[in-house]
Length: 231
Image (cartoon, rainbow, N blue to C red; front, side):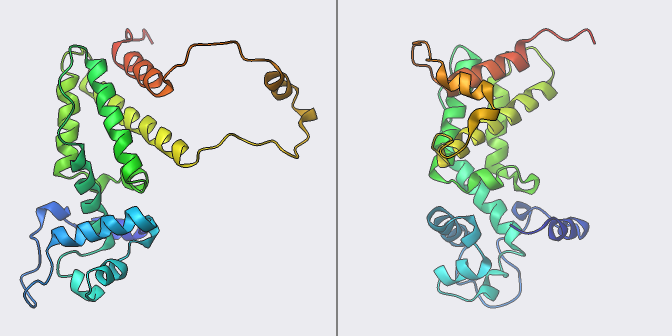
């Protein structure tokens, strides 16, 4: 990813979102590749080698052309990341079928998000880019707002709930990628009596629970149906 100064410079120059610009500049030779092909090559590279491997030069190499040729279609790597993000968000279509309870429907949306993060692990690192809100991302937000129409609360609370839901899904995706229990091998726990007691206490038998579902249901219910505070 580019640094904050670079992005700030783009904004100061009045950079239009990539979706508001034509597919390529009006000057130069006839295009050898489409924007579609460039984005597809970049996504394949990110999926197989990670986000750090995605550079204008590397994508150009995958297409068998020079890096300079890509600048006929894109002005920066930021443009490329924005297009990649929106393209894979489009994989969330078709949206889950309507459910009688909005919580059930939002849970389906969240599970769909989690599958997307599993398919494209790099997405967790770029999904929050403010410049990356393209047509597919807006369509997804629009669908979430449709689901939440029956909920009687401020629209700002709904946007906050959607954002926090995405954050929780991202957290689960990151934890899956770094799966494994913490190891205290070789560590003297003598100075940590509460940890020693906790690990030494047998866990009571409990029915298996879906932590993902429980977390999301609690979050959405707490944020959107709790009575307003008197403060």
